[in-house]
Image (cartoon, rainbow, N blue to C red; front, side, top):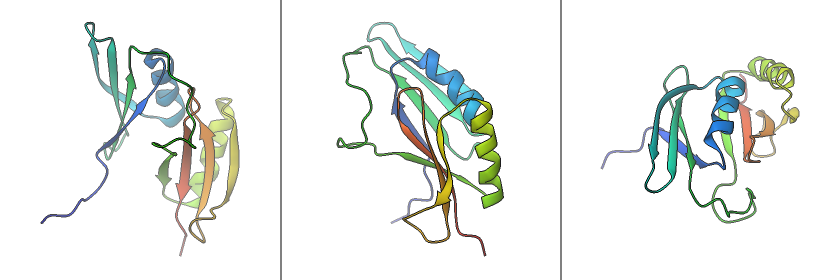
Length: 137
């Protein structure tokens, strides 16, 4: 049997794609690729790609807006971690997040993998996002 090779995309439910898409484009430098809206169901989806096209993030807005806000302590998504090439790149991301007024925890050693470092922030819906650098040689 063939093995999984990577993550193709991840889909996040958001309360308002018109609010979330510009944030992901501006802050995370993702590019809008395609958009689909179904007037009959109220479902709206926007596919965003990384500039390298190695992965995609799909933002999904459902018509039912009676949901509670995001909480990683409930069953389902805990967080999403995006990888950068180095600890120096992680420092550059700190500057970028600060420039856009995004609240974040500065790069700190990960408790999960010795030698790695991580920045933690949240998107407009409170979904926890991490920017991760693996250990350097």
